[in-house]
Length: 236
Image (cartoon, rainbow, N blue to C red; front, side, top):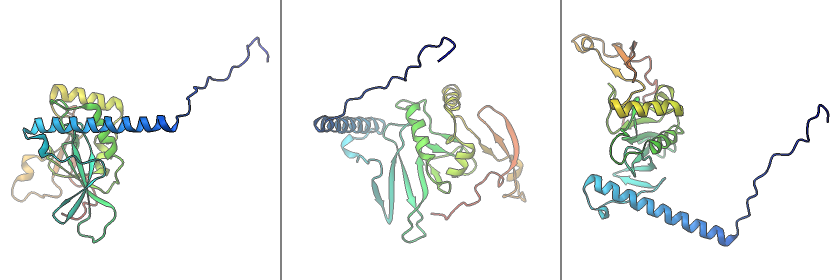
């Protein structure tokens, strides 16, 4: 060594005692109890919001299947707008034995260019962000069917929302969106608004010029098909 520098000390390492089998069993039991308590709290909150007895609700866990007629839906826990909120995945009903997911019923979690309100009682912005990031892991082709929408089209896709919606927002952009929603209502990453003239007789429906409005109020002209998903997929 030269230059008068002292010895280079190794970075300290954190020592973590190895968990015994008994300690692991205690931790697992405690985590299961905490999960059950959270589930009951969520059920009570949902029952209170819906003004129905908690006993009338069935708690569905992450990844559980529920039969609706001839369809089998897969539950995804997506809280944020409300506690205990769920989204549901559906395989392509037109293909017998289809293995990949084709549709997502996102309720009040993911909307076209937006997300469910987080400025209402029981809402949790941090939980909403976690739910959106979970949905962002779904394949591009999955069509999103929300509980309602603020855009011209009542559906979107994971690809579109990852490209220009809230599925790819940074923490800073998310914080800005939550502040905007708190003071101005629902914020939009984008929103298609059909101009009045396109509704007149003889107007071309597929090539009508639409205005693209952002949460900040900026607008740009575009065509409907330019940013639309090229593969709408089969209709349910």
